[in-house]
Image 1 (tube, rainbow, N blue to C red):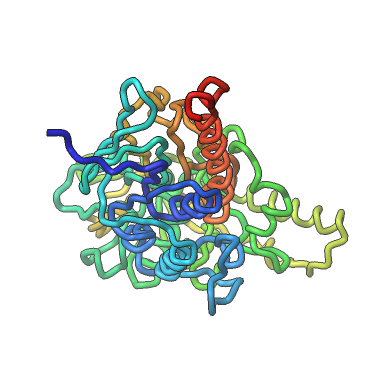
Image 2: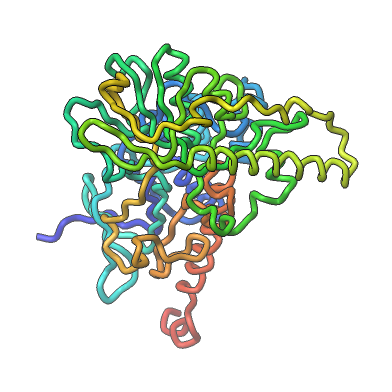
Length: 425
């Protein structure tokens, strides 16, 4: 017997911010489509974030063009549940045809004809086109150096919720990007002893001269940068919208009680070792910070913009002892460390896509989301078209481009030459 299949013109996999934006543009262009989501709309914002997480950009910036955050300060930073509710409201506004609770398991190319066969927990789907809108944060990555110690609680930042989740004792947070820094701050404020492993990073000002960093990136034209700055591809960004938004300063964190260490090197016999790069990493972060301030000042002077001076932003905190005399080795039991939180990012997971659309590193081969495999598209990738692609507003613009390409291809495939037109008359 042949399994029954649901036929779809365009299938969108994922109902997060990318899938919702994609659906809006497909609907505007009259493209029949269906969105499949393994859990609920905006599920990652609901269940893959810690309780106190807020957006890293202000509400006036991190939103779709067609809807504002109702009843919320436009300069504020909405919490994760508020963002999830916003995305759900947007899906309702544009009648996104989402089918939730459907796990997509495999995607294969049809043989000898166009389109794809998609196997799901809800049966088979056949689609002429598929948009993979599963985003960039798919599988949490814990590096292989993680200790094999049953006596330690080890979780990824994706699984962290709040301080009460962890056993009593000190905590080592590995990774000082936005997630690691915000989690370390929260643990420290809760009374925990915290060690924070700091690698190479950028630490832009949260705001300067009455303008948020997102605004400065906009007037600098940085949101449209097509690729990361050479040599900075793997440098994390330490920025926070927590507590109304504030600039991350690692010296201040140390003065508030967090012990800073360099990049984590290894674990062995209950001891952790760290690279001797802490002072260098902090110094380079300072260079990035002051470069932004200098560029902003130059922009104000050159353009005659009426923004007040902000001398407090250039304040430098005293060098803490943990930076002047860095810890290179730490006895975990002696330091009372009972938990390690790995704020070490994510890796892509496309194992379910069984088509030739990836390079040797497993990354999609694409041009602005248009895959090398005809009929397959990607959305929500970092730098898919520009620096802003990973933001809510950025993915909306990328979705518009991808939708336009789908419309073009549908028009080509709908073309009939004279003989075909005559035969069909």
